[in-house]
Amino acid sequence: MRKRNRVTTVLTILAITGSLLAACSNNNSSTNNSAAANNGGKNTTTNETPATNNSTNTNTNTSTPDPNAPVDGGSLTVGTFSDIVSINPLYIQDTSSGDVSTFVNANLFDMDRQGNVTAEPWSLAAEAPTVSADGLTYTVKLKPEAKWSDGQPVSADDIKFTFDTVKNPESGSPGISAFDKVESVTKVDDKTVTIKLKQIYAPFQYSLVSSLAPYHVLKDVALKDLAKDPFGSDPTKTVTNGPWKWTKWERGQYLTFEADPNYWGSQKPHIQTLTYKIYADQNTEMQALLKGDIDFTSAVPLPTLDTVKGKDNMGVILAPGPQYEYLEFNFDGANFPGKYDLFQGQKTRQAIATALNRQGMVDNILKGTGTLMNAPFLPNSWAAPGDAAVNYAYDAEKAKTMLAEDGWKPGKDGILEKDGHRFSFELQYNAGNSRREQVAAVIQQNLKDVGIEVTPKAIDFASWIDQNVTPGKFQALLLAWVLNTPDPDAESTFSSKYFTPAGQNNGWYKNTKLDDLWVKGYSTVDQNERKSIYQEVAKEISTDLPYVFLYQYGSPMAFDKNKVHFSDTDKPESSLSYGYFFHLINWWVTPAN
Image 1 (cartoon, rainbow, N blue to C red):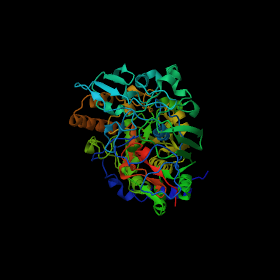
Image 2 (image 1 turned 90 degrees about the vertical axis):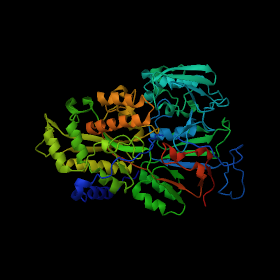
Image 3 (image 1 turned 90 degrees about the horizontal axis):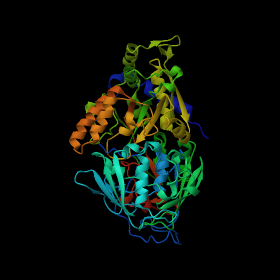
């Protein structure tokens, strides 16, 4: 395992915390005033595909294939620095698990490049959903040929089981907010269901862009035991319905997948073998990419981007993605010594936001590729709030004043104290992520400058999600959301209805005004009305600050362009969640030159 060069990190911190002090009143000029699709976490597809013979997955060509014509066979190795947690569709909530799910789990519906919900040749649905005139009833029909990897048909029972389970709080599914507005799921016949909503829920079409869990495998598992069932974590006990089958998982090392010879789809995958290879950190992963040990990565660290671009065989795609990074506060006193929540004061949280040089992070760590955010709505989305959200310009002296006004006073060692408690907290982030390593160091230095002690702690991603993030056992987090859909609804993350584990509010944040606004925002389909409501949301959330919203960012994708091929129709799409694997079923590989 290679540790990150500490000197590089220190120099980056100095650049951010020092050189921008003279511009402290104007460092946050990039505001959230345009509009873009909220996608993310994670889906994608379109209709045009290259004409080719898909009847076999074995490449029998003896001559060098034409790189412009798809060929069958070969292997693709994808690099990452985080292991999966589980690929059970009921519980996926981390990026690595979502990556692997795109290989093996077909979605009921998919999204095209513009973020429209559609039934693709590889989607389980046979056609677009039928929606009643009142917007409350959806009828969904499955393709008659769709089946699981064990040969059982994908049926209406699978849809009903999946949706009923997710919306039941006893299951602890993180997707509950997308389905708890469902009143009933009724089986019409073996391939058809009707879904009746309790109320208008504007984003519901995107809820249908989801994978299914097999009723015939999990029907007898108690709800309370589903999350720990070996389905989703043991390849031998996990049936799937996508183009590839899961064949092996060496934890912390790699996962392998083989094209399913009995895959039901009319379009077969060209690539025979997929390997998802796990490295200790991004630097090690980049060395593997440059040496040719891996063929593709979705996250090139920006400090190494020029080196990667300088390789003749490397193709690079960099554009803003459907994701934003944030500093999250925990509001459960049980996570703090003496059960004293350090972040209970609103002015304290505002002072922390003011003390952070967010623009410096964008300029020096993201190399100008990010855009500052003040609310959970992506720049360029129709819900982007512009000036409705409160902007916190970097100003260390103002932050000190705000902290003093909220009752914090310097102790003997210079660290602030209040009610007998030192302002000292642990900031958790995932090990191996070079960007977060640098951002955590800047947060540590910025807050030290105003009298707050921060101890960054890097933890292995899979265990961190399972043991800390999901159960809400932390004091503060540095993490990012990858947004699953183009809809701006974020009730599951910020409403007190969805405290973890039956939701994604893992910081135990409660704001009854926001709780009501989220409901108001999705209870109409009028986009102008919704935009007005989300401006109210932006003002309230940026004032109260459950998070310090940092920036939208893009993760550079890189691939060996001599080996990895796709048509323009099937190229990766940065704006979509998991868009780096957009139309992967249509990609092909040839031996690298």
